[in-house]
Amino acid sequence: MLKSADTGLRAVPFPMDDPERVPAQRYYDPEFYQMELDHFWPHVWQMACRLEQIPDEGDWIEYSNVGKSIIIVNTGAGGIKAYHNACRHRGVPIAGMPKAGELGTADHGNCKQSGFVCPFHGWRFDMHGENTLVYGKQLFSEHQLQHADLNLVPCRTEIAIGAVWINFDNEAPSVRDSIGPLIDRLEAHNVHKLRTEWCFGTVLPANWKLAMEAFMEGYHVMKTHPQLYAATGNMYDDRYGSGHKRDPNEDAHVRKASAGATLREALDAQMLSMELLSEGMAGMLHAKEVEIARGLLNVEGLPEDVGQAIPMWYGMVANEITKQLQARGEPVPNLCEVMVSDPVNAVEFLFPHYFLLPYFSSYSAYRIRPLGPESCFFEIYSLTMFPEGEEPEPVMGATVLPYDSAEFPPIPRQDYSNIPINQIGLHAKGFEFMRLSKDVEGMISNYQRILDGYLAGVPQEKLAKANQLLGGNFDGKIHEFDF
Ligand code: FES
Ligand SMILES: [Fe+2]
Image 1 (cartoon, rainbow, N blue to C red):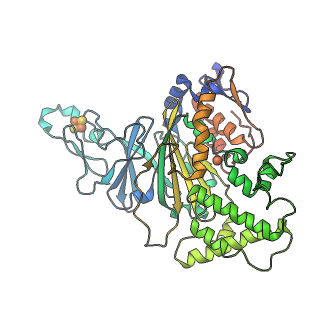
Image 2: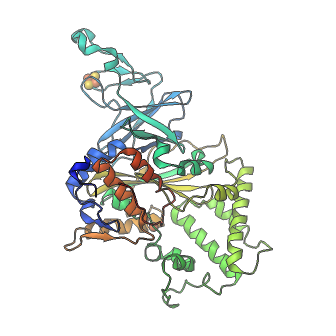
Image 3: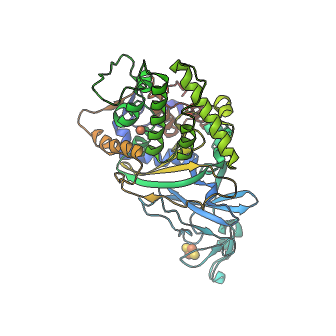
């Protein structure tokens, strides 16, 4: 596929010829990486900043990825503009660019009064990108001073789910056409009203795709997150391990939620699992929500049948969280209603490099940017809602830590422990390809084949349609595409 000269498509090195196999070189080959820089990143929508970071007129923030830098500006009255970060004189960035590995420290400020001043010779630009000063104008030939030609070069932007998205390609389908109905489902959950509580960033010595793929299935939970498996092992066994008989001595904690548990034991196991998730992510399932759930542990009227009682109890928890958080003034939607009308998965991947992990009303989010073929910058955001008017100051950058830092919440730290060694393993002699499960690792295959579509030059309308199938594809199946 994707390499015939007569279709007009580019040849892709190490293509996904078998949807169940990912060639190892895709994660380290310099030519493959260069193709991503040339044919992929310039055509996709990138989550560049959160709207809360530029709340007022004139507020701006810089966004860098793969050596390209963009300035995003709030121009007032709901307007957002973005510019390529290069002075029209000799190309010096007018906003500071972070060094590789420091992508969490985006430059930012307010340009309403001062505009932007180039640090080299002092040319000036206003928040609309218009050149307002050429120092020593008389020194330049007339044809060098065409006004429109002196303005900052604009970059396309769109707003969705409370974030500003940028795309270098004016012909690309819109964000909504690229990501699809998932955007509407997330907005039904009021994702655009979330605020960042904290953000950590780290450099992972791994290809950016490898880092992302550690979060595209739950099949790794049993071994990578044993504490979660121990709390509700039956849930994971039902989903991934049918046929596997667990040795009761294998893990002394695996017991309460297993078949035969009483309702009390099952509820305790659910509660423990929620606590572990909440502490393990330091958010996502927010401590305030765990507290509300705990208040319902002794609720009456649940059927004795555990299989019926647990989902019912979850519904009661969602209802109580809605009631209590709304009463505090938080913009929480009716969780029971939106879970039915606009269901979202435990992990939602927003192609190409952003993730949202919903639970009740709070979320975790990941954003991943390549630093080279075998290195990437990984950010984790904890997002939650606040009563209107009581929102905290926006978090303007990531606190950057080593990936094995004990300051990372335990669950991502466990995920991070696999990623760098996985990168090394890919180089082993005789390791030619990753072997994917067709049933639960489909998302990895799906987005990798869409990536090939970009590299080959498949029409973007087709790629956008394929992208839409990634929404809700966590733990999903391999899809067929018509390219
Ligand atoms: S490069 Fe900006 S003023 Fe010279
Ligand atoms: Fe994980």
